[in-house]
Length: 318
Image (cartoon, rainbow, N blue to C red; front, side, top):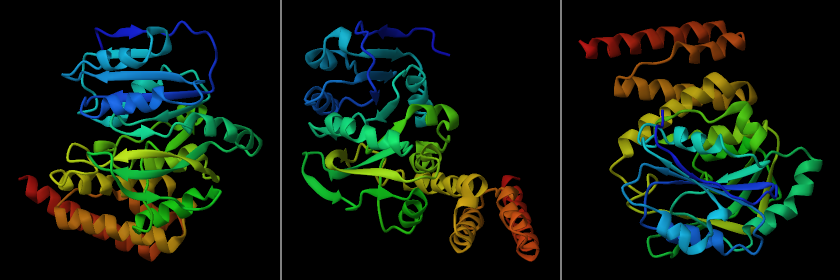
């Protein structure tokens, strides 16, 4: 529990619809992030910044662009991001009162019309009960040079189809490119996966209520890929693979009923193969997928597989 939290609270009583939430730890590109927020053509947003016990004080950068009444700042004394990034997101989000929020990486940037285009999309979102907005995004490098643009050229995205395509490597996505409805976050919260590797993908499913996502092509987010980012570094590939298998487990045990059988059978096969090859304990709960679909033979077959995998896992612990 935090024992020493410095909070700068906004004195502005205007109720915004949108919260921009920045979980801060790395100073390297933080000024560019703050600059992009300060450059918004529409300033109708609340700004929340949570310092995850960083060795570098971000306040000089923040105060260069914002007055104290323009943001809320939380100076946490314990580093939660090192344990699980989703825990750091959530302790900031628990202060958010706005209807919608974006989590913006501390090295990412938003286009000048990002907030403006959000407000243009609100009426359609309210009319059609849409709970997730997704923006076009660019990968950029350490020098702000564009590496690749991800634009799906549609007005609506089906979260089930999008998850399948991403699993198959046909599309990409990141956390920063999404705006979520706050009440859906409170209903589901984020899945706690190491490195939060896949937490955003599962949030896309749960927070959308498995309904269409409104895709906004008139603005974009720039997501930085560098040696200092989890996505960009190769030194964490083993941790990312392990985390992604936990993502598979949660996809199977909590979301499988929304997906086609053939796809889920592939995910189960991939999950068990990873556990077997890496001598990791497997969750018997994944076999329940077959029982729920009355595939008794497949259920018994996978129970045996899991028993065998876990026997190997237990042996390696001795």
